Picture 1: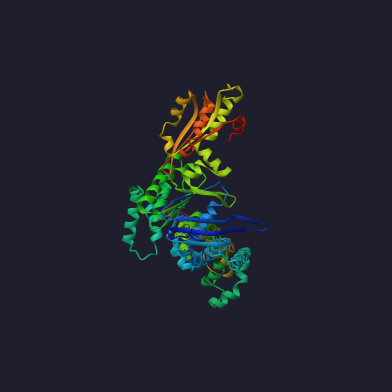
Picture 2 (picture 1 turned 90 degrees about the vertical axis):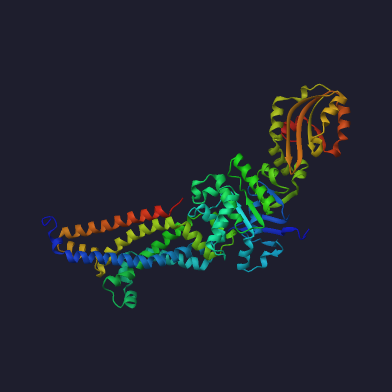
Length: 223
Length: 357
């Protein structure tokens, strides 16, 4: 062991902390992005032309915001957004500060995925609910989100996995986490075993998310 | 005819859809009244505007012009909340069932009751009772994806009944089902009409469906109702080419004429022979008109095609036969039976070639 990963063994505490930092960043940015993404996704579906609460202005504004944010490369977004981060968090460095660019980097992606998942909900079922006198709110919660739940879980897995990838990039602005260790220690000091182990830990996280997500999707899907 | 017994009263309904460069008139100047307790059929080919028209009844489709009165309520004057309340009294079933895949069968039937003041236990009890009514009590906890088409439609019917509707709209509800299942679903609708008194408006492209359960029928073409009346009347005396087309398709007369045309040549007939088409309505099907007259005039009857249906409680029959003998005397005699429901027509080569009467 000592021969294989000598540097890692000397940095056990740092690895443990970095792992927690990655989990922290992933968890909290996922939580807030989930709320924003679901909100945007639902709004995009119901305000679209022919939708339940058709509203062309709202739809086109949301659509453009999502497109714009998705077009900015994440590494640039990290830098560009720092004034906002400073305003919201009070600093631009550190794990919590990294949440701001992470959220803006991932929620538009998630919103688009949620939108697609909800568009797959059978239009006929929505019409049936309307014919039964359901209100728009009832249709959003009892039809769109309930019927689309399986797909929403699936796109959530994809999103969380992408998000884990983004947290490693946030190392570039001093966020900490496994990406930071892999690059600023492992890569910079030519301690390849550190980079390698960081990657392995990330892979384990990704597989865990995939397995748990698939299990949940299977539970909720009755198609 | 806006009497108190009319549960549905549509006046001057037009629906136009605007796309980028054209406007499509889906429904044009339609008046439609349906009496309480009726089973009213609307028949037409796809694109005739049937689906659009029935969606006006619960305002899923807002008409461009015209007024919509259901149960004496002018739906267009209602606030959104009141309209949703009114919609609970006009249930709908669909060609593709439109069940919720994420809910159990019981959950689907329970759906219309969510958000009402009913307790959960009451909701489930009512849903279970309705499932029993449609014969699916043992499927309560399964998911729709595990059911056959006919069973799915039964669940949809149970769901439609959960809000105690006064009107049930059936939008091609049997079009995706096989003939046997179609029959059982139609029988169920008939039973619900009789037992619960729910008024049924159904749209279809099959005359067979109209024939099996409807009392009244409207024939739609290009957004307009071109003919309407009692089913037995439209069946025996269709006034328009389209109605005749629907009737002949459903009685197989069309096929019969085509078949006869390929095997029989009128040019080879003897002078005392004719190919004749008979139409019997009501009592005449029970009396031995033909045997009586053929004896009297010494006519030989060679039957090539015959079909008797029961439509809205009346017997309706058609027959095509080659008659040999004293045709003139027979014809004179048979015209006297006209007011008793027998009509005849001598078929010519033109009829056979055109495949139409």
